[in-house]
Length: 334
Image 1 (cartoon, rainbow, N blue to C red):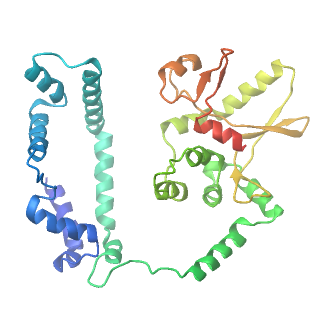
Image 2: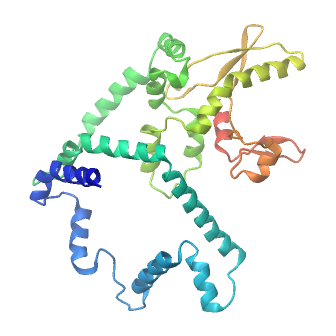
């Protein structure tokens, strides 16, 4: 308890210089500050139809009756049971809450959460706050003039994208370890790669593009349990593919490769999991996907039980990639 209080007090103390003057350049925060003086930050229902009160009645019922409060209220009010899908929805919510609570109660999870909390307090964000809050702070960064922006863009394209064939080959050789290589990660950020095309092509044109651009340019994903398992199985999968081709009396080798830049459209690049060699000639590429995520089921079973699965049966009863799946767009770019 003392440690928790100390963390909170230290955080407030570090930000005291920003809090004393009560200055902010955040217009949304200023508006909400005024709103909370009159209606608690929520828009009051001026039509007097009861929605404002209903929201709080619902919160009280949820607190008293638990995650299944809605079906229970239904049964109590109507003297009948709610429908199957209604009950299923709230059963799923209760299950997810229980799983989440169980996960959070694990000692290692608590320890990691405490560690992150301490690190956050130690670092603090005063420097970041000072860029946004203060008497004279309206915008943290100055606008770049259109002429300056064009110059910066041209310089970036010339030095980072429009590279020579020898530099293209050098990047490929230096990034054969792929995700382990820092250069591989840096070079991929500067170019469009096949794994991004599904999201780009399927983007809803009615929605702002900023969120997609941010995820493409500043993605922080560094892998999860499924991707790590897939990486550990890549070599085994390659050997199985070589054996499969031998049964067809085709002798092949799989060559490691790094990031391959398109020599014509140099803003495009790809890093397949291997280059297929037949008689020492490059005849294709191999891209390995861990589509079952280590589940004890077959591909055929996964088409029925796994949501958004990448495969489906065609009219010949053969498995094929779904044409609306991100993996399909990725393979088309290759």
